[in-house]
Image 1 (cartoon, rainbow, N blue to C red):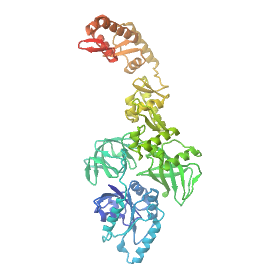
Image 2: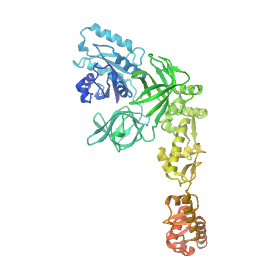
Image 3: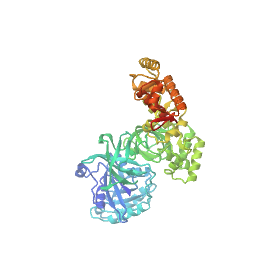
Image 4: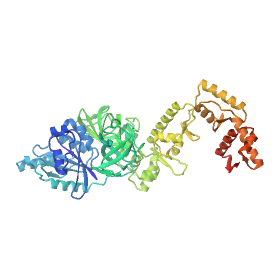
Length: 614
């Protein structure tokens, strides 16, 4: 399935043409229908002569609503540029075409509308000639022009056939197994709750799956999927979809957020880019810009790398510092505006790479390699969002054969742009150098948060850390070697190497009293009233041994009891619970907890009513 987006000047008949083609009026708001002016994005769909189903996003044409237009054309496969035959090319015709060109949209059809209002053939021919001159030198150069009238129906069948032919040469939307769903509308539907609409890219969504809205973070579950009013169990890439979400309110979602699997997409605060400035003005260093990417709109500061500005009509390397953050991935296209005027646009090369040194030639060379689409650049882009990953996992995202991928990853590791991580299973995982630093920062912050919440614990449980930073189960094991020495494994947990619990003075006194009491009690320890966190700390440091059921030994007393049980089994061959109780001179509860602890440690094993040495 493909998505067509309209473009063109206000009042040139975009919505009327869409309705004539599809039978669906795209304007949703009562104000729009009353004024005959599209303000928000509209949607419709139809089946073309080949049987191909398409969605149509109808955008506003008024200069005040270009920001809404940009939200609609960020994820389309083909542009339908609409120009009224009685007026010809107008200001928003030019700006919309500039935007389509900046977004590198290479497939389009021009609909010359309102033909019923033109009496002279010569005038229509002049308008067509002007359009061909306007398209020349843009990504839509040579696009077919079809004369139409939504009122009389003239040319509608030809327009449908032309759209069909143009889409026949359009590649199928790619599926790299990493779904991204750009939200362009949020609303509540009676009986369903929260619903969002948008276009699905790069992967599939299924009912029942968990998703995360980026940026912002609320997680939700997909309750239902629908396209063209048909229920789906699975939505495919390139599809306009309505997603019914459970567990999240409309106040937590907004246009411009992207739904992705939890942890797969990170908010971008900087993007390294190749920028093209339009001919009307240069883009100077530190220029404040509005960034439009997908359906998102945010503010940014342009840092020009290697020069003081990007000259008018030229291209340059830049880093854009973004606030508030947005969801971005390498390869994404964007548009820049200043004071409601489109000034340029470009392509994202790297996300969250850290502040760049403007005059560093190595930075420019790296961005040049990424922009050229080299195997190394393709591999680095593929790592974004899946790292750390095996070669097999990278291959599902990168469009490279096995040999090229292997050579690319070796070159990246040799250059220091990627890191090979050893894994206990023997299969290496790979992470970009920038990605490793991002992961280190996320893990350190998670550990610091855990230390504040649990100041007496030696380490954060590995499973809890993986869930917190959203890592695959085997990813943390691969990362630990690369994160040393600042981060280390401690038993079944992970901690910052500089971290050690710091009991308060009162806790130290309570601990000393408890240890003294347990030591004096010998092999029949009394129950002690100790805070569970403090007890866990004493157990982790080896001062006491918690056997469970309230039975806690001083460490040296537990060693005595263990040695006695081992000696007894060594001489008798086995021991019963009663035998252990009598040999230690303790009670049944203590003996049972002790034997169960020895079972867990692998010292003894149970056979019926007896224990033997394991």
